Amino acid sequence: MKRIIALACALVLIGAIGAAAQPKVSEKQEVAIFALGYTGWNIPYEALGTIDIKIQKVFVDLGRFTVIGMTQRFASPDVGQFIDTLRKAKEASFVIPEKYQFGEAILTEAEFQRLTGAFVIAVPVVTNFATGYNGKSFTWETSVKTAVSFIDASAGTLIGIAEMDTSGSDKQSQNQSIMNAIDGIPMQLQYEIRKIPQFQINTRVLTASGGEIKLQLGANMGIRKGDEYSVISGGMVEGFKDEREVGLIVIKDVGAEVSTGQVLYSGVKMSKDVALREIARLGIDTEPFFHAVIGERLDVPLDPDGEGTLNSLVGFRGIASRGFYGVRPYAAFEVPLNGMRNYFTAFMVPINVLVGAEYRMNLGRLSVTPYAGVGASYIYVTELVTGYSADTSDTYLFHVGAQAFLNLSFLVTRDVRIFVEGGAEGWLSLSDLFTNYGGIGGGAGVSIKF
Image (cartoon, rainbow, N blue to C red; front, side, top):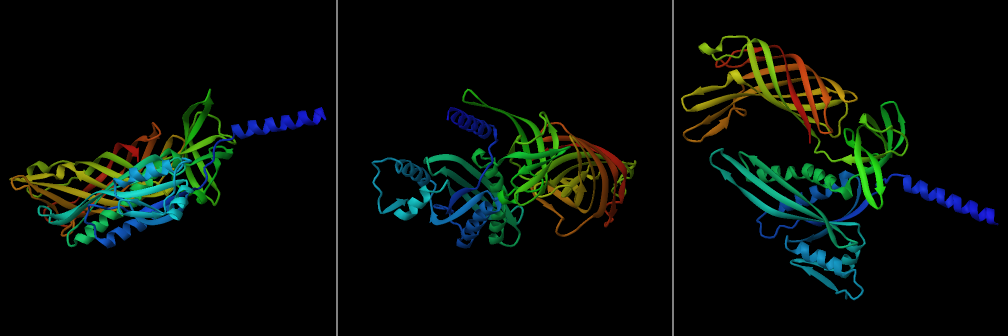
C-alpha cells in the first residue's frame, strides 16, 4: 500500500511539474460589445449603424473572441459609473435593482447578469466628430475620434482603452467623406486590440525542423500569414515574471488548428514547448529610400540646368505584410528631385505613384527580394502668396513608367531592416512640359515594421 501511495504521489508531482513547465496557450474569450455612444455629437444615423457593424466585425474577424452584441449606447461619462456598478455587484450586500440606468442607456437585471458572466465588456464611444467643407482644397473633410474601453467583467476593472483617430475626404459629397473616415476604423481597431496584453495570443512550438516550426493554434484563433511571434525565454522567479524576447518567428502558412512559422533568428534552440507570443503589427512595412538612376535625365525644355545623366529620387514604399507571405503587394511614391521647379511664387513638385508586388525570400536575418511595379506621375503645385495648393492627379498625368529592382536587406532589430537595392526604371513623358527619363541605378533605405 505504501508503494502504491508513493507511486501515486510521484505521478501527481510529475504531472504538476509538467503542467507548470507547459507554456500558456490562449483560448477564445467572450466579449460583450455595446453600440457606439455618440452623445453630444451630430452624427448621421446611417453612419452610426455602419460604425456599429464595422466594430463588431473587427472582433469577429480577429477570431479570438466569442461576440455578444448589445444595443445600448453609453455616453463617455457613463463608462466610469458602469465600471463602478460592476465592481459593487461583486459585494454580498449589493441589492440588484430591476433596471440599471447609465445616462440614456438602460439595462435590465437579466442583461446586467449576462454581462457579468462575460470575460470582457467593450464600450465604444465617439470622443470627437468634425465634418465640413475646406475652401482651400475644395473638398469635404471629416475627422472621427473613437475610444473603446475594455472592462474585466469579473473584477469590474478597466483593462485598457483603444483609441482611433481617422479622417476622410471627398470632393463631391459630405456623406462620402464621413464614410471614408469610418472606413479607417477597422484596421486601427484591430491593431489597438492586439496591442492589449490580455488579448495577445500566447502559444507554443509543437515541432521544429531546421528553420521551420509548427505551432499550436491557427485559423481557429485568427492567426494570419505574415503575423510575427516573439520567442519567449524565462518564466517566474520567486513569484516575479522574468521573461525576455530572444527570437522572432514569421507565419508562412496557417491551418485550422496548427500554423507553420519560419525562424528569422532565435537565442534558444527551437524545440517542443518553447513559448511564443504575438507581436501586434498594423500590417504595413514602411520603407523610405533614395535612388540614383543613371541614364536619360528628367528635364524641363529650354532649362539650361537640365544637362546631365543623373536622376536623384527620394521615395517611400508601403508594403502589405499581414495576410501575406512571400508575394506581397506594395504601393510607393517617389519625387525626382531634379524635376522640382519654381515659377515666380508657384512651386511645382512631380510625384510618381506606383503599385506592384515583391517576392521576399527570408534567409534568417537576411532577405533577398525582387520587386517590380508600374505607375504614373502628376504635379503637386503650391502658391506661396495665396496659400493655394492642388495637384493634377485627377485631371492630368505627366508620365507613365515602370521599375524593377533587386532588394537585399538585413534585420537589424525586431522592427527595423536596412537595405540596398539595384535595378532600373523608366518614365515616358505624356506632356511637352517634361522629357522622358530613366535608366539603371541603385539605392538604399530603411524598412520599419508597423
